[in-house]
Length: 164
Image (cartoon, rainbow, N blue to C red; front, side, top):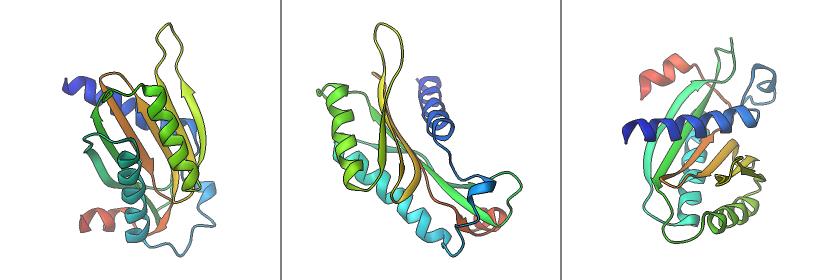
């Protein structure tokens, strides 16, 4: 079960980070003036409210963890936050994806539906903008997950890691 959890979280993080552009070295130029505590709070807030919008018993899987905001960028940081819950609570995954899309639209997050291939496709939602850089919602049968990446903030990752 731990291997499944790790796989689901890793897939969600990769899809979120790989499908949508996160903070990159080229996107940090307009991010000056943001405080790490502010972007950290924003990513936690949007993930926790997203979880509440779908319902069920969500738990923190990882984070909020600080990381660099692009290769070679030493003075910018972002936070990644992942929550998960056991699979469907009785609603169809499509209903949960629709509820998430409606919630994110209300938050100013641009959404894109996700559907894997195969006879029994996995559903999800990707988003960007609003209070975060990227966010992903996956409705895998055994485990749902929400993975979000904050905007970039001013701050040295090494210093911020020491503060945690």
